[in-house]
Image (cartoon, rainbow, N blue to C red; front, side, top):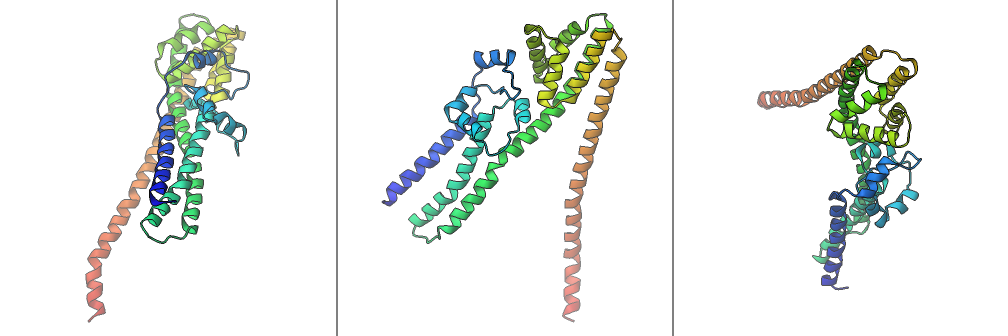
Length: 294
């Protein structure tokens, strides 16, 4: 194969990989099918909330899901609204890019007349592919952690809204629905979808909140469901209970923020200490040098 043909092949492979990554990164427009599936999901709780699940299936994402080498973080993916097909396609694309990039660089060096052992790019490519395979897991875990904190803030406000509606002598189901309609964030949208689905299926709203809490691993929704179930079954006044749960949730969030701020402050102390050591070494080095040569 001539040098020109090698460059054309390498360029085609790189262009195909970049096109695939760009296609996966660009958000797809919302469609009616996924919206209806959110209102009436299948029985399994591993359903996807991605904008266009068909795109992942067309690119072989469903085949990857069936042959996934390990368990998928379905709760994290469901929370951030990403489908397992898109998640595995991103992992496969990054791993393929890490595997091929060193080989392409070595091929370019070979075309320029530089001798490179094929063992080196092969080893580097395998290591890069393994490292890049786990990058989406770390990214999804980080996004899910941030989303859970954001949802907890919204849940604290939702608890207060439900308590105010309960203080107005309205029913438990009506209080949950009216309080959910007040918010405009994505967390309130998830709660609205769950309550609307429960209303369409003729089930109780606290069961829907309990299921949503189990799916997204959000204990605060399970606590709210238990409180409202108690109010519905026994006619108990839950205003003080809701306010107390909201207060304790805000306290937990403030404690977490304080711990994060303390951790960031400790991280900042290390560069300062290193800078002080460097300054001390720079000041003492001339004196020590003079003593050594006296």
